[in-house]
Image (cartoon, rainbow, N blue to C red; front, side, top):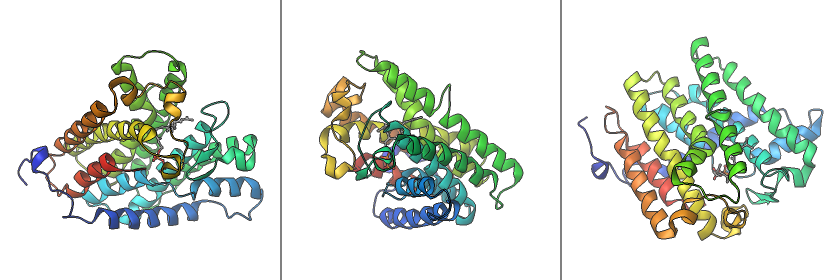
Length: 308
Ligand code: GRG
C-alpha cells in the first residue's frame, strides 16, 4: 500500500465501525464474565461490587482499540480477549478509585451510583484493588500467548497504569494542580499520563499480540499517543458541552474543581479545532503501515465525534 496523507485516508462508510464496536463490547463482556468470580461466590459483597462497576455500561473504548490494532495486524480474536479484559479492568479500577471522596468525590458513574455510594468506601477500595490484580492475572494466565509475550504485556500494563509516567503519576499531578494556572505543556503531561498512557498501552498490546514489527509498533505508538490526547480533549469538551444524563457522569465538574483542561485554557472553539488537528495527526501516524488501516482511522474519527 502506498503512503497516504491524513486527508486521503479511507473515511467512514467503508467499514462498519458501529458494528465492530458492538461486537467487541460483547466479546470483552464475555471475557470479563469468565474472569470474575460469580456474584454468589463468597465473599459475595466484593464480587457484586466488581460486577456492578464493570457491567455498568462503559463504552469499552480501550478494549476496542486493542482489538482494532490486533485485528489490523492479523491477531486472532481469541488471542486478544484476555488482554482486552485486562485493560478494561484497570480502567474500571481507576474510575472506582477516582470517584472516592478522597479523590474526585463523585456520586454518579456510567449512569448509576458510584461504587462507594452503592457498597461503601471500604468495599469500593477493595473492588478497585482486586480489579487491578485480576487484570494482571488475566494476562499472565493467557494460554493463547507465549510466556515471553505475556511478560511483555504485564510489564507494559504495569508501566502504563503506574508511575513515574503512567496513570497514577498523572492522577497525582492532577491532584497537585487543582486551583493552579498550568502551562499547556503541563496540561499535556497530565493528560498523557492520566488518560493517554492506558489508551496507548491498549493499542501497543494489540500490536504486540499480533507480532507487529518494530516499525509497525513505533507507528502504532505514535498513533496511540495522539489518540489518547484526542480522547482527553474530547473528554474535556464533553464535560462543558454535554448534560449529565448524556454522559452518565456529573457534567461540569472540571470547571467546578478548577481543573486544567483544554477548553479552560483555550476556549471551546479552539479546543474543538485542536481536537480535529490531533485526529489528523493520529491518522498521519498510520501512513507508514502496509496494512489496511481503515478501522484505525475510523476509530480516531469516532473518538473525535463521540457524544459521551
Ligand atoms: C485513581 C489511579 C487513579 C487514576 C484515575 C481515570 C482517572 C485516573 C480519572 C478519571 C477522571 C477522568 C474523567 C479522566 C478523563 C478520561 C477518562 C478516563 C474518562 C472516562 O473514560 P471513558 O469515557 O469511560 O472511556 P467509560 O465509562 O465509557 O468506560
